[in-house]
Amino acid sequence: MQFDKTLNQMLVGFCSPRRAEEIGQLAYMQWLGALPGAASYEEEAVLAYLSAVNYRMTDPPVAVFCRLIEASLRNPLKPLDLSLPTPRRRGGAAKRRAY
Image (cartoon, rainbow, N blue to C red):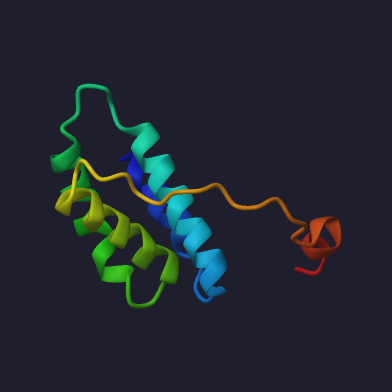
């Protein structure tokens, strides 16, 4: 199942609210882009929500993802507030070597 990979990418533990928002929005866009063309959005959204909802209290990006799913199901014709993260340095090679 493609959503398992997306869910695992969201399970980062603690992060800043800003970063959680970025990860949750990116996960939603990744999940949406991976849906098959003939799939029912509502059915796939419910399945993704049910897979993720148990993690929403411990992983803030999952809470953002679930909130986006809920909003899209509640008001399907209203655009969601989605954006790409602003480019910025996140540590590069020095950060990777620290682990």
